[in-house]
Image (cartoon, rainbow, N blue to C red; front, top):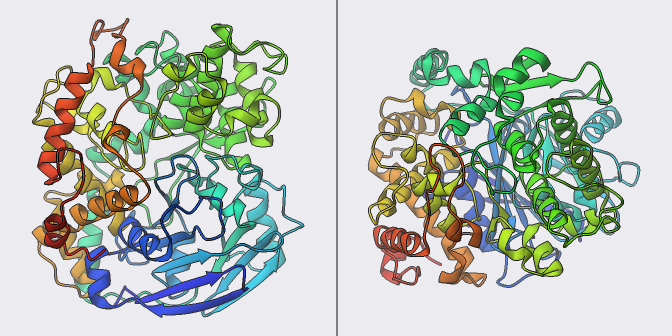
Length: 606
């Protein structure tokens, strides 16, 4: 199957043993790789109801079929497990050289089960797997861990995916870091590694990745390289995703002060333009990427001098406007701390924003905040609370549980402004002024996620009135979900999506030329639908009910107070109508369950 290896590596930490299994051609054809393959393997290697921190909860890593080929921006891996934050499927993506190393070691996927007796790391050296002690690394940050493992192994070509102190201390939104600036950031995959006392997975891969039709793939890849240097990716290349700040603020879609507002008076001071003019250091690209969206910023003076970190819009939104903070240097410092501790910037920022609102309402006292004046806009409190969460110290102990559990613990009505869906904190888009997005967030299988849905693209187009929802949004949201799932299974970065004239036919060609697998555009689209349904199967198994598909009370009860969308509302009736349209488009029951006939139609033998 050419660029497919057809090999699965299973590592048992408890037994300190490893074995390989065959992934046959039909299996790979149905799930491809990435999120699709990781979800399927998670279902097969886990049991219903297992606690996310139980050693029987596996964590699965899968690369895409195009990883390691000439296709640009295809060096991604998916990590999937039962999320300690939501209890449902936790799937997170990252890119860089680590997935290339895993592919070149000869594997399409890795399943890690069991738990080590003492802190350890795995070293995968092509066909050999070594279990090494990591006591000396326990407590080290992600960046330091990468450097020290490479020194220990004596090879700078070794690639490392690791957790930081947040993962070790089971912060429920701990991330996995790799290649210094990349993270599998959401749903707490790093905490599951921590529960297994698995500090890192180091990989050295030296095997070739062969294409079925190398010349055809080369021509198509060069064409994509050229397209990726055009207008479709200009935003990412010039300013990176922080370019979204001013655009969303103008649309009254920039969540501010824990979603109390949708515009931020300090937007200009946290804009992509501001960061570029005052803090730009360099631009980086993931392995095999022709776009280069990773903008690295540096603080050169003041109390945070020396801070250097990559900044994406979602991190900026969560640590900036959501907390009412417009101090760019403090935001960069908070983001750097998140990366070093190994935790999701979005969930960290949302947890702090919730705590700031609790403090201002008198629910959290100054004594409970560790003496901090934990108010919106306090840059010092922001940085201090990120450190407290990473160390699980003081108020950081409860904030490290995520806003759903924190609000349940504190009570006193704080659940009302705990901004999450299914336990996953909201991304940086205002649902009341983006109604298709509102639907996508409510029904998302991993919780409030813009990336698994991309429904916001519908709202930002001319196809709909973004301020008014209707039943027809269900089909539009479904189409976007299936599209995102296909990209995530192929392992193609979403920033490349606008470089295709007709995605499904062109992607089917790339797949054929890389792997030799013949697939029509319609069959490839069906893979995305199959994967979305498979994720829902996992959630249903873990106790999902119709009541889980909803949004926080604030979004369904309070109108927007500022901006061009002032007065805009999202009612429960409006959301329920859109959800009904979504279930109908999916072919599910009115309660959101999947009929056996639908599973059969998709070839899902569960």
